[in-house]
Image (cartoon, rainbow, N blue to C red):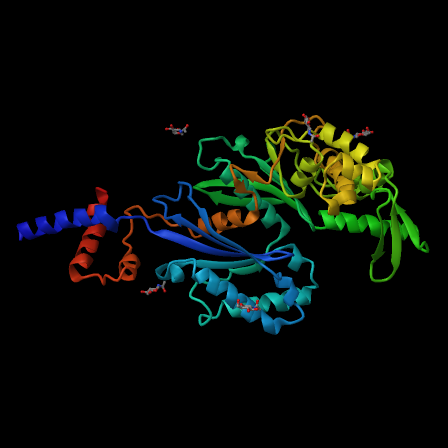
Length: 457
Ligand SMILES: *[C@@H]1O[C@H](CO)[C@@H](O)[C@H](O)[C@H]1NC(C)=O
Ligand SMILES: *[C@@H]1O[C@H](CO)[C@@H](O)[C@H](O)[C@H]1NC(C)=O
Ligand SMILES: *[C@@H]1O[C@H](CO)[C@@H](O)[C@H](O)[C@H]1NC(C)=O
Ligand SMILES: *[C@@H]1O[C@H](CO)[C@@H](O)[C@H](O)[C@H]1NC(C)=O
Ligand SMILES: *[C@@H]1O[C@H](CO)[C@@H](O)[C@H](O)[C@H]1NC(C)=O
């Protein structure tokens, strides 16, 4: 008897070293339903031994699929096939034996946020109906799987992405070394950071690797690049109600175009007038001192605690504009004084001069002018950065990794479901998948592993 136990124990030790306590790999499928496409990403990570250590998540697969989800709002009957194409693609990227442990998410942003409420609802209801149906795929579906993200969630997830990729979560850095994140998309712009002082509103709490973070996050849903451009045009039409041709100070001279807002069609003629353009923008950004409570406020009466002393990453359109106008140094540090000077110079040129002096992509001639003026004003007047600040870095990527929100969303969701594997679990499904049905002996060893051995492993 003693001999038998001894043999079993040594076999068990071998078995354990060989495979049983190998850490199982988790997967997650993320469908990022954006305004121009749906991006399918598959992530994987080894289970943690403790929820206080950092998850090591890597992106295994990426594919951009057109058309976007929002294009199905008028033909919902085609949506199931679109989704099934996505899930079958995702299933081919996750090992068979992991399918039923793998969460699937479809998170929608700007493209869906701006649909009429009932349109968005029937679209998302259809997505839910298809993805919650067990016959359609083998992934795990929960109540959190399909939803429209709030602007703040987008900001918070981007904050997680940035601080994950720059190594903050896996180091001993103090909270004051977390970077803040500024994003600028087509629809919205987000600011997310850990304030130095009190946080009175717009707080978002999260736990990562065993620590709690209280973030300030606000999303200005109609202050993104395309919305700002549209608002300026609408404002000019309002100011010139019966005009057929309107000068647009935010567009460059010789950039003339028709604009149709549904009610009326006008011709805009660029007039290359930065100070007039800036005064329209400033009007949109003005403070509402009377209704600002608690103080201070950033735009209108939206509370924002002081930006403190941390580094900020400015991503997406912030980074494109700063790069196009050469307003960053080799480390990515944004020089607002230079951005402002360049903006005023650029915005005074004709569109031909602008293209010949600054090599901006040709579709963005006039919008680069408007955006450079807008960004300067937003960062200084609204957010409160000194014009000579040296702590904004303008990046699309950090350490070669994209700063997009989906990565942070996967970290966040994985943390919500976090479990410890103190003993190193038994990959039963791995064995099954490798075609070895576990024998009675293996099952006994597994039992032993749980009861005694893993204490020494
Ligand atoms: C689904 O995939 C098939 C094969 O690639 C393609 O022909 C079809 O158009 C796709 N359906 C939708 C709705 O995207
Ligand atoms: C997952 O599928 C395997 C068979 O492939 C099954 O043994 C296991 O119970 C399933 N797990 C869940 C959580 O459904
Ligand atoms: C992090 O802190 C722990 C405990 O305070 C210490 O043992 C470890 O060496 C530190 N690691 C680094 C990279 O500073
Ligand atoms: C960009 O600015 C740097 C210094 O601020 C300068 O050395 C470089 O020549 C500029 N590049 C272009 C393309 O203007
Ligand atoms: C930007 O430059 C203009 C023109 O040189 C100047 O009037 C304005 O004060 C500057 N803005 C900031 C925020 O420094």
